Figure 1 (spheres, rainbow, N blue to C red):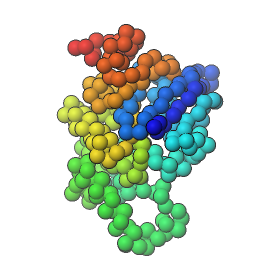
Figure 2: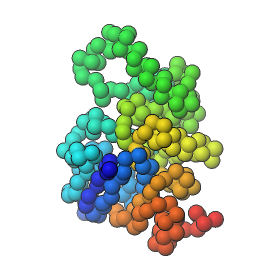
Figure 3: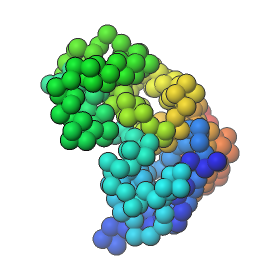
Figure 4: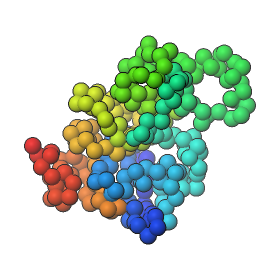
Length: 253
């Protein structure tokens, strides 16, 4: 069963082609990674899926729902959430309140008022947030302010805010960016557990090749907006064009 289907996606900005007839499917339960040099179109593709960019042609469907006809907040309601490369956290709020921001998509104006006056409703959302924090290994941090927390903790808060949406597909934009080797190993474990334990399909953009090779079921390599190669990690790793254009000797060391 195909979870996400992208067909013939083309988008250009001021004459510069960002994505050129990109097509692939992501199966339910996969960890699918997008890699490529800076400017290859990875973030643009994420933004198209997320509703932040509108391609000139092509289609994006998730479980047969036309995502290009939906606004970003509607896409979240269809089961797709996202993390960002640049942290979107609020430093003067607690970790718990930062995570609870991710629940806003489920709320109408009436729901927002109800949550404001209802301790019971607030309690239900907090309980869910605490479950997510426990899953990510940051239990007992809920009352701490985000300001001054280690970068790794702030990254986990970003992931937690995406998970509280209860997604079926999560888009993760460079989850290991800025992390040391140990933190990257932990992030890799968390990504695998998001798929294996929470049954969430994962689409990852990442530059850390060791992480990508270790966690991915399949990898798509973009170069100048086009698909250069696609397949299982070993297949991509040994693809001559991929070695020449992007990976070099790094993964063969």
